[in-house]
Amino acid sequence: MKRIRSNPIMLIMLVVVCAVAVYAYIKLPADGQYPVHWSFNGQPDRYGSKTEAVSMGPVVSILIYALAVILPGLDPKRANYERFKKEYFLLMQVIMGFMAFVYIFSIMAAFGRQVNITLWVNAMVGVLFIVLGNYMSRIKQNWYMGIKTPWTLSNEKVWEKTHRFGGRVFVVLGVVFVINAFVGFITSGTIFLVLVFGLALSPVVYSYIIFKQLEKKA
Image (cartoon, rainbow, N blue to C red):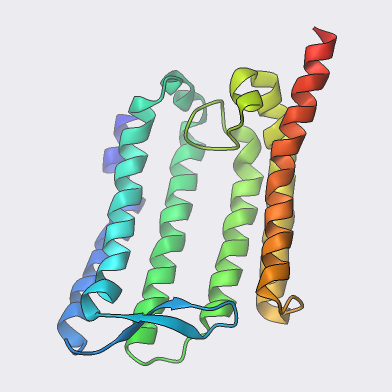
């Protein structure tokens, strides 16, 4: 997995985020308070200093990049990464790109631009889930990426079946996020979270059921 250190797309995104941070730090007034968190309805519900608002993007991007480089080498199943290397690179790029876009939107808000954070973040989360769902079945058994339960990690067949099922669930979740971003048919944050967590937990339950079925056949 050494090649990820020179992955050009991730490096470009990291440079862009850091450049935006430097520009924002120079231009934003030092004594201002800037939105750093938004409610489900898209209204800022927490403000922070310039340092907090500006530093969040680079810190998160550097962390994602570092984890992408370090974790495969620490994984007891590190040999499996060669079996889904292209997918690993792509998914890490998508995750890093998602966080970069969220950061750029937050900096635009700090400069006073009218940005519909709820719409864009929900839409981007939806796209993220759809992409993850389409590649989920290609992720091979490992300890850091994918649906990790005691049953998927102990049986490769359970891992494969669970990730095929989980991929479909993620695509459904993504479509829900995208539609909700533009239509807003779910107006309650609580209901939305219950729906999301319910769907997200279904692969965990599925992995247990599949494990027990295979156990009976053995």
